[in-house]
Every structure is written in structure tokens, then in C-alpha cells.
Length: 430
RNA sequence: GCCGGGGUAGCUCAGCGGGUAGAGCGCCGGGCUGUUAACCCGGUGGUCGGAGGUUCGAGCCCUCCCCCCGGCGCCA
Image (cartoon, rainbow, N blue to C red):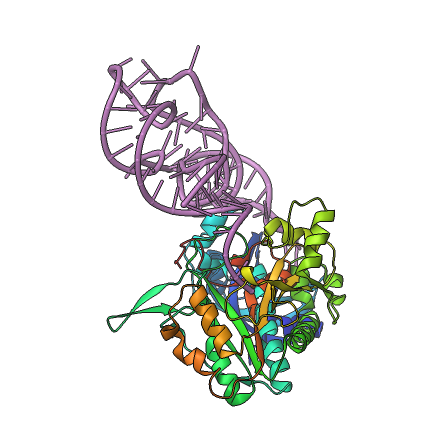
């Protein structure tokens, strides 16, 4: 049975007969030997094809084989300090399954070239590491919410109206009717939490803004939760506890991958709930002390956000935003009607917003008038408003940008690497 | 949408007082008894992003357009 590269390296034993399947990561020919670095999903290992140890046609096939050719190798393990990883495979037999054409990526390519060749670049060690970390992150999120009694649900991606007016939507043709790609499952989750109590979903969300920043994608993975009978305070606890858990799992399962990416794991190990929380008012005060010219009611821009993150070495909350800065569905704070029960969670090290959430307005009249105030047609929101007519309850939810969280955990300098096929700045290929 | 930078060989770039293009890497051939982004020798390589214009002559100057990168805004 074929073994993975990782299994063989971890055995650290000599003389084990092995069969390996993979791709030629690197190749060096010196004298009568060909050093083939065979790569599979788990890593790469040096395989030595010695002219005097294999059939002539095998040697010739490997001599001709180019980088990224797919190969099968049989041989036995040998501990050798000269091999990367300390173990190599002395080849007794092998086959080139497909001799690759000249592989375009050789090192030193520009961002643009690598993006055009994303389908090939995804084989890189760095990309493998990122995708494995993302896998663990998604698994940990699911595990946490399942264990905590939440139900996974499947909201639609094709929708008739916007959740918020601000974001630009991708328009599609739905049997001759205009429809839009979802930019949030929130309204549907609000509906579903009236049935299932606590729900969550993982869906793609779409934003048609032509954003030119390293933190925006046109299509991203949206993890959203919504819970009936839950007020903002309690939801903030859920958010921080689940994030603490997720970071812990990733550090546990993906230490090797984080090191491949050069991530300082000790910074992640310090992430413990509860996270610091400051109100919007306090944020403004902090920024004023830092010399920013901001006053109550101003939106927090990228520079302001980055300045705040330097005050903390774990994620932290900003909450109680001015009503004017936030969408109509956020619940107005009864003790201070100038603010809403909304919060953002910002990641440290300058990464910024990773979660946005709020308690939802549950009073029919208030919600109705805010929809009108914002210039929307209440008829478009009839089913959303109905929730406030048939057994309304306090409820809250948040949205988490999976690629944003991954970017922070993995220490990436651009969100495009947090997803295999990034859709951003009008890029649609591959 | 706004501001800034850029598109020259397969890749990364140099060339600019206008005189029809260079380097490194790659690739191809040869050499090397253990390579680690191998090394040594030889060879290959271009509608200078596109379309107009100025000029005896444009990669270089002018106009329009397209694409890419960085930042702002928008947000997760």
C-alpha cells in the first residue's frame, strides 16, 4: 500500500520497503544519480535513482522527467544526513506516469503571474499549509457550535433583496427576474432561529465593491450565527469563546504549517477569552489621545482601526456604535438611544475587523420606521417584518469572515492567499 | 469611485538628450559519483500592453483605451 511522505519521514527507520506516489518537486542529476524530491499532500522526500540500482529504462525515464511530472516510486528507506528531513528512499523501481511539460513556476515570479497560474501555484508548500490551516479552522468552528447545541442550516445564495443597503450586490438573471447574490445570510438565519433556537451557516457571500485593499474579497466564506433569546452581551461571550477554541485547535493541529508560514505561534497561544472590550466612545477617546482628529459620530477608518489594534495583543471588541453608523436592523440601546447594540471584533497585529454582530431590533414599529427612514420599501421586507409580528423575541447574531480570521491566524499579508481561487478586483480566472 | 506606481525575451528586470533592443534566470545540448533555488561550458530566445499621432526615424514624445500592483473608501 502506498505510504504518504509524512508517514515515512516520521518512521525514521531504515530498510522499510515503501511505495510512493506523487509529483517531482525538485530534481538534481549528478554523475550516475538522480535526486528526485517527491512531493505529495503531506510533504516531500528525497528519492535517489542510482543508475546502477535500477533498470536502464527506469533511469532514463527519470532522467528525462521534468519538474511536476507525476511518478510512482518503489524502494527502501535509508537514514542519511545529506537528505532533507534526514530520510531518503533508495529507489529500486519506479515509473513516470506523466512527464510534465515545462512547469511555468520556477521561483521569483510576480504576484500577477502567480495569480494567473493559481491552478499550478496551489501545489506550493506555502499554499498547501494555508489550505490545511483553513481546513482545521473550519472544522474547529463546526465542532464548537455543534458541541454547544447550535444547528447548521442552509440559507439561499440567490436572493431578492439586500440585507443592508450599503454593500453593492452582484445582479443575476433569475428566470427573467432580477435577483442578487447573497451578501449575508443574516435575515434567513433570523427566520430560522425562531424555529431551531440557535443556528449557524457557512456560505459564500458576495460584495460587488471594487475594493482595492488587502482585506477584501468579492466572494468570501461567511460564517454566521443567530440565536433566539440571546442579547448582545451573551453573544459576545459566544464569539470570544468560540474564537479562543478555534485558535487553540489550529495551534494544536497545524503547528508545522504555521511554522512553514513563519507565523509567531506564541502570539496565538496568548489568545484567551475574555477579550478586552471597549465602547465606541472609549475608542474615540483612545484615538484622540493618540493624536487622531476624530469625534463622536465619525466612522473608524483603516488607520484608526490599525491604531486601536496596537493597544491589544488579543482580539478585542468595540461596541455601542452610534446609530447613524450602523444598519437599520440593529437594536437601539434602551438606556441610550443614540447608540445601537452592535459590536465588532478586531484582530490584533493590525489585522482589524474579523467579526461584526449585533442584537437585532425586535420591535415591529421601530424596525418599520427605521426601514422607511433609510429609504427602503417595507414591502420588500415583509417576511422579515413578520418575525416582529408573530412572537417576537430578543435575538442576536454575528458574521465572521473566515478568510479574515485565517489571514490573521496564519499571519498572511494579503487576503487573496486565504482562498484558493480569489475573486477580487475583477479577477475571475482561474 | 479616488490617489500613486507599472506593463520590454518563458520569468524577473535594465535600456530613455528619439537612430529598428540587453542582462540574469529558465529552456535545449554537453560535462560532473550526493545534489539541497547545484555547479561548469555552449546554444536558443522579442508583434517593447493596444490603437492612433508627431518625426527622415518612436520601447522612448503626444492622445485615447486595456490590464496589473499598492493605498483610501466600502465592509467580514
